[in-house]
Amino acid sequence: MKVLVVFLVLAIFGTQSHGYEVYNIISPSKNGGNLQETVTIDNQKNIAIINIHSGSCSSTTIFDYKHGYIASRLLSRRACYILKMDHKAIPALDKLERYIYEKQAMKNMYSDKYFWVKYSPLQSLIMDIDWFLVGSPIRHLCSHIPLYKGEVVE
Image: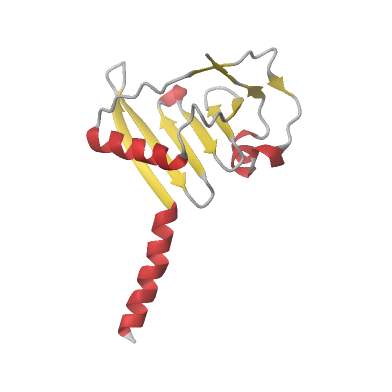
Protein backbone atom coordinates (compact mmCIF):
# COMPACT_ATOMS: atom_id res chain seq x y z
CA MET A 1 0.00 0.00 0.00
CA LYS A 2 2.83 2.42 0.88
CA VAL A 3 4.51 1.71 -2.45
CA LEU A 4 1.29 2.56 -4.28
CA VAL A 5 0.92 5.87 -2.40
CA VAL A 6 4.55 6.83 -3.11
CA PHE A 7 4.14 5.93 -6.78
CA LEU A 8 0.91 7.96 -7.02
CA VAL A 9 2.52 11.03 -5.40
CA LEU A 10 5.54 10.79 -7.71
CA ALA A 11 3.32 10.39 -10.76
CA ILE A 12 1.21 13.44 -9.89
CA PHE A 13 4.07 15.79 -9.01
CA GLY A 14 6.41 14.41 -11.69
CA THR A 15 3.85 15.08 -14.44
CA GLN A 16 3.19 18.61 -13.22
CA SER A 17 6.85 19.53 -13.03
CA HIS A 18 7.49 18.65 -16.67
CA GLY A 19 4.91 21.07 -18.07
CA TYR A 20 5.87 24.28 -16.29
CA GLU A 21 9.34 25.79 -15.81
CA VAL A 22 10.26 29.15 -14.24
CA TYR A 23 13.70 30.72 -14.63
CA ASN A 24 14.86 33.79 -12.72
CA ILE A 25 17.79 35.53 -14.42
CA ILE A 26 19.68 38.46 -12.90
CA SER A 27 22.10 40.21 -15.26
CA PRO A 28 24.17 43.38 -14.96
CA SER A 29 22.60 46.30 -16.80
CA LYS A 30 24.40 48.98 -18.79
CA ASN A 31 23.90 51.60 -16.06
CA GLY A 32 25.69 49.50 -13.43
CA GLY A 33 22.62 48.06 -11.72
CA ASN A 34 20.99 44.69 -12.14
CA LEU A 35 18.29 43.60 -14.55
CA GLN A 36 15.93 40.87 -13.41
CA GLU A 37 14.11 38.65 -15.90
CA THR A 38 11.56 36.00 -15.05
CA VAL A 39 10.93 33.48 -17.82
CA THR A 40 8.00 31.10 -17.49
CA ILE A 41 7.74 28.26 -20.00
CA ASP A 42 4.47 26.36 -20.06
CA ASN A 43 4.84 23.32 -22.30
CA GLN A 44 1.20 22.32 -21.86
CA LYS A 45 -0.10 25.65 -23.21
CA ASN A 46 2.88 25.97 -25.58
CA ILE A 47 3.77 29.51 -24.43
CA ALA A 48 6.71 31.37 -22.94
CA ILE A 49 6.18 34.49 -20.82
CA ILE A 50 9.13 36.80 -20.25
CA ASN A 51 8.85 39.50 -17.58
CA ILE A 52 11.61 42.09 -17.45
CA HIS A 53 11.70 43.97 -14.15
CA SER A 54 13.51 47.24 -14.82
CA GLY A 55 11.55 50.12 -13.29
CA SER A 56 9.93 52.30 -15.94
CA CYS A 57 11.36 50.07 -18.70
CA SER A 58 9.62 46.93 -17.41
CA SER A 59 7.81 44.76 -19.93
CA THR A 60 5.96 41.50 -20.43
CA THR A 61 6.35 39.47 -23.61
CA ILE A 62 4.39 36.36 -24.56
CA PHE A 63 5.57 33.88 -27.17
CA ASP A 64 2.40 31.93 -28.06
CA TYR A 65 3.64 29.01 -30.15
CA LYS A 66 0.16 27.46 -30.38
CA HIS A 67 -1.33 30.46 -32.20
CA GLY A 68 1.92 31.71 -33.77
CA TYR A 69 2.06 35.22 -32.31
CA ILE A 70 4.36 37.27 -30.09
CA ALA A 71 3.00 40.15 -28.00
CA SER A 72 5.03 42.62 -25.98
CA ARG A 73 3.57 45.10 -23.53
CA LEU A 74 5.71 47.94 -22.25
CA LEU A 75 4.41 48.81 -18.82
CA SER A 76 5.50 52.47 -19.01
CA ARG A 77 3.29 52.97 -22.08
CA ARG A 78 -0.27 52.01 -22.67
CA ALA A 79 0.59 49.98 -25.76
CA CYS A 80 0.95 46.39 -26.84
CA TYR A 81 2.92 45.26 -29.89
CA ILE A 82 1.82 42.10 -31.71
CA LEU A 83 3.99 40.28 -34.23
CA LYS A 84 3.23 37.19 -36.32
CA MET A 85 5.81 34.59 -35.34
CA ASP A 86 8.36 33.66 -38.01
CA HIS A 87 9.36 30.13 -37.09
CA LYS A 88 12.62 30.50 -39.06
CA ALA A 89 13.76 33.45 -36.91
CA ILE A 90 12.23 32.46 -33.55
CA PRO A 91 13.63 29.38 -31.79
CA ALA A 92 11.24 26.55 -30.98
CA LEU A 93 9.97 26.42 -27.39
CA ASP A 94 12.29 23.57 -26.42
CA LYS A 95 15.30 25.42 -27.90
CA LEU A 96 14.27 28.62 -26.10
CA GLU A 97 14.11 26.68 -22.86
CA ARG A 98 17.57 25.25 -23.57
CA TYR A 99 19.01 28.74 -24.34
CA ILE A 100 17.63 30.07 -21.07
CA TYR A 101 18.99 27.11 -19.14
CA GLU A 102 22.43 27.56 -20.71
CA LYS A 103 22.36 31.31 -20.09
CA GLN A 104 21.49 30.72 -16.48
CA ALA A 105 24.14 28.01 -16.14
CA MET A 106 26.94 29.77 -18.01
CA LYS A 107 25.91 33.40 -17.19
CA ASN A 108 27.34 34.49 -20.54
CA MET A 109 26.15 32.90 -23.75
CA TYR A 110 26.92 34.11 -27.28
CA SER A 111 24.10 34.11 -29.81
CA ASP A 112 24.02 35.70 -33.25
CA LYS A 113 20.33 34.99 -33.65
CA TYR A 114 19.06 38.49 -32.88
CA PHE A 115 16.72 40.36 -35.17
CA TRP A 116 15.10 43.78 -35.15
CA VAL A 117 11.38 44.49 -35.13
CA LYS A 118 9.92 47.79 -36.24
CA TYR A 119 6.50 49.36 -35.98
CA SER A 120 4.95 52.62 -37.04
CA PRO A 121 2.59 54.01 -34.39
CA LEU A 122 0.45 55.90 -36.89
CA GLN A 123 0.35 53.40 -39.75
CA SER A 124 0.28 50.12 -37.85
CA LEU A 125 -2.36 50.80 -35.21
CA ILE A 126 -4.66 47.77 -35.04
CA MET A 127 -8.23 48.98 -34.64
CA ASP A 128 -9.98 45.60 -34.66
CA ILE A 129 -8.46 42.23 -33.79
CA ASP A 130 -9.76 38.69 -33.74
CA TRP A 131 -8.70 37.61 -30.23
CA PHE A 132 -9.46 33.98 -31.08
CA LEU A 133 -6.73 34.14 -33.74
CA VAL A 134 -3.98 35.37 -31.38
CA GLY A 135 -5.08 33.33 -28.35
CA SER A 136 -6.20 34.02 -24.81
CA PRO A 137 -2.73 34.62 -23.23
CA ILE A 138 -2.14 37.55 -25.60
CA ARG A 139 -5.74 38.75 -25.18
CA HIS A 140 -5.26 38.90 -21.39
CA LEU A 141 -2.01 40.83 -21.82
CA CYS A 142 -3.14 43.29 -24.49
CA SER A 143 -6.89 43.87 -24.23
CA HIS A 144 -8.06 47.43 -23.46
CA ILE A 145 -4.87 49.14 -24.65
CA PRO A 146 -3.75 50.31 -28.12
CA LEU A 147 -2.32 47.55 -30.32
CA TYR A 148 0.40 47.92 -32.95
CA LYS A 149 1.47 45.50 -35.66
CA GLY A 150 5.19 44.77 -35.76
CA GLU A 151 7.30 43.48 -38.64
CA VAL A 152 10.76 41.96 -38.83
CA VAL A 153 13.46 44.18 -40.36
CA GLU A 154 15.81 42.30 -42.67
